[in-house]
Length: 413
Image: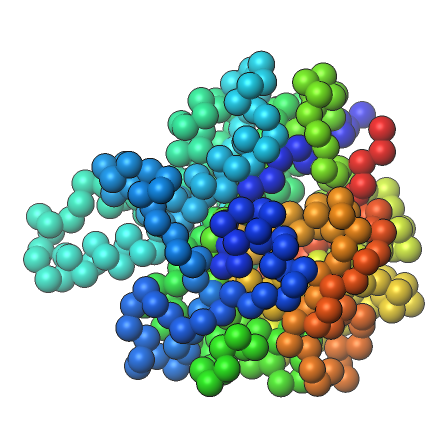
């Protein structure tokens, strides 16, 4: 019999908040995290704005010597994991370190470090490369630092599957506990790719919105006028725990993870299958894993990127997976306010599902003004609503055709 897995801690740093509560409050208010890029001169870029984490000062979290050894994506991961670990009360718990693991998701990893060191190499030659270059850049190092800081000696690695990374990380952590390989897992995603080369690269793909005259409304999931996603950054970390282990130490429980599905379109490097069948299959797998029927789901946190192909295809996949029940679902896109956090996106969206179940509020999909006829579901436009949600599904899709879905349910003893 598979072990039950609950969520006992949450942590986040996003473009609309430096912690979970601030982020959640601003999501309910419809606050936009988008503005002109401040980290570098983007005046010659086709897209000149992004969703940066505002007013982040590493010196408030790390000593100067330590921060120089950490790429920004790792700094974000440590800030979010500290909140999650404290929220779960793990510091004071009597844990077996061998049974506590970390699985992060990062689609790109330390690209800021990579760009900086390549610049030094070109300008000054190989002897100027930092000895910390490689351990700052590699995409697994955030997971390693979380383990080192907390002496968590269990399963530890990073999953890279583009924008589906955090969902795959959470799903794999869920499985790890189910199968008895860990009692506690720290999981989620982190990313810091608002950098010149990354923004230029996504711009060259024509994946980014170019609404430079009105960046605050640039992310418009399911709107007829959508023209691309908004590049974002940050981290979102959850503490997953085996139910009896959590109960034994008196942990508070936000919700229970009950299902996970993963598939691939095997179709195209960036475009989804036109009929949405890959994502459909993924959601059906998650439902089957959870032992649920389509009508058991009340709410879907959509991948909802604000790109023409994704939103149309995802809507079709939801209709295919849920049939007539699709029109009874509440669907929203967190990316309408925080932008696309790439490998970290599904982490904040899983936290949103937890907060929705906990509070009975569904945040709005902002900037949905002109409905696309091909996107005909209830996307909770522009204003938060109150609704008792028992079971939520979170979708996450990535370049390469990667699909992932997790199902989070209200905890019942």
